[in-house]
Length: 299
Image (spheres, one colour):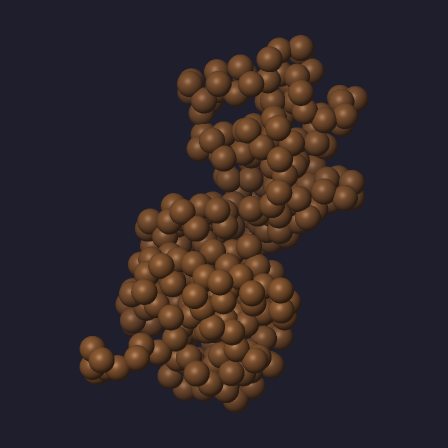
């Protein structure tokens, strides 16, 4: 056991983008030292300002940290990072992967790492980077029960609730389930506001009416004003959600489900990405819906 006077080993964090930077702030705020790395050196500056330490590369993170969080775009980047780490990822390591990746690839990676004595948890996040930073996100974790229990102190500061959803890949699957409802709520809000504008109604009043009645969903509180004001500085990028919807449809197909609404949602998101909106906040979906009606933006 580490004595109270001994320095606490850092938690590794690879990927310091929107979600990764929020993870770093939550960990540091919870009293856990962080050693981070990102391919973009500009992101290192924010980690240092927050009180973290920057590693030279992914291998150094694994060399110095027994527990390592990953926050990367897809499972492809996860594999690339683990390849770059090489033998530095060794028996006794615990990897917590917050990436929303393909559940089958996630389960296969967990089995591959287990054969090397490395524990792997797919620790996906329900909530935007802003919600995570505020402590309002929910974590959904897949993997071995023992490894999950051993990371309680690390998971606790990250969100308001954490669920162990089953074996490897279960966290990734649960994230896609939540993203079906979350994404369609957001699309429905955008379409409702677009209709209000198209009918000549006061869109802000329409939002207030929906917030005050049975149509209410929490997404209105975070995305309603963004849609109305055109503030699309990203807290969760539209292209990232399109990636998730494509994974959702793959999972639905494997389960023999039609996923009718998600097919329509994908078409709208693909239209938005083709229009150059992919790097914006996912609330920018309203631009596609208002453009279809001949509008140039929100009122």
